[in-house]
Length: 120
Length: 469
Image (tube, rainbow over all chains, first blue to last red; front, side, top):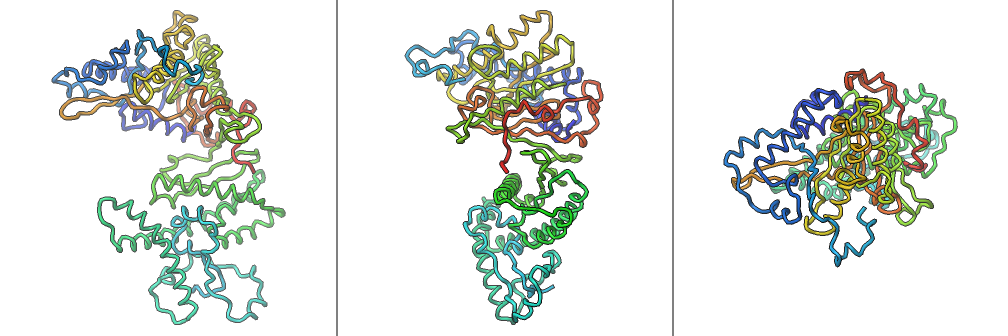
């Protein structure tokens, strides 16, 4: 493999996963790494974030819920203990984000009048 | 050797190339900076000797005390020369003062700081010159051994050091009898040199002069082998020459080209199609389609085809995609929700989305084995309360098999990839096979795994012109 591209990816992934050693992310498709490190970190982080913050894109299903993302919520007093378990910054892509919302712009907005292709 | 030899000394020689680097680009007449150090005292001398025969001494061999501006000299002309240099340094001073200001943002900078900077630059200039001298010798040696290559463009640095180049050209004459320097070539070489230097001076101003990047033409047109020597800022250890191709999305209205060019789209499709082990994508958008009339770009189709193939063959093949959850801006604005809708239309929850379609075609397969989507999120504590925000992925990067890198400004959407709309530029980077390192990928020895290079099937990259020569 190419050391330049390889080292770039390793550095990126170390940031994502909160590692200091590039050797830990050397083989991206190793089953053990992929499932136990990459996917597991991602899922675990998502769960921990949800435990503390409760409202995240993962459970914002309608447009009215978006306000909750910005507003204050009751925090778990032991949040520091939970947050310190989070490794890196990688989380799962929230598949259910705005699932029940009508994302099509309303009839009389300028976005509705423009051709769709403008936004693609 | 004293300075009183009939030679022209560039101010850059004394201050160091890096000092003038940014200035030179915008100065309309850089040659004005050249100071004739000593006009020949009697003309007979010059008539006897042709100027070409005078091989100027390499600047590195001049001891530092000879350019000491405080040294006492009696010669009136030399005194005048000193004055000139001081004047030039005065001009440079402004430049240096801004640099020093940057360094000492919080403190007040003093004259001593400026003096330190000048001294440091002179020292750095000397060091670099010495390094260049040895590098040039190496390159010359390399050129003679390589019959395939067209030869190094030594002129790329000639704006700063005309003398050593002449020397090299002289020695080169035996191997290259006809060497016509086209003006355009010269300019592009210079431009590239500047660009490289600017790029590195942005990374680390202090380290910039020590980075030595040389680009050499290969036999293939429009391609450059970028050689980098010993600097961890640029490349890690063991790294060798790399092939890089510039691809772009341009059209008549944006770049004046006769036909729209979407070579970024082609490069990405080609990279995905030829992927063997994994694909890592980090992008701000992910708007594409498998077979809907719009969006028109077919990245998703290529991904779908490659993953289906992997599932059918039961290959160990992975695709990791990192995206922001929602675009920057007001979440309530219709534009934002529209974009969210199109991103999800490409990924999940819609009949034509990638995951839904794959799940429909392979109901028994756990798709997590093959493709995962991620976003990034960080947290902090503000006023004793925990706060969180997504890490907004603004990078546009694609890494395939740890061998090919596509990085640039192109998002994955029709606006960036069609060519007729936004104008974008990307670089496709591949390291030469000889420099690949031993490693394993999914338990297999990955170095010997046979691969079809992206450039080997370069016909798929339609136009992608790097630098016109």
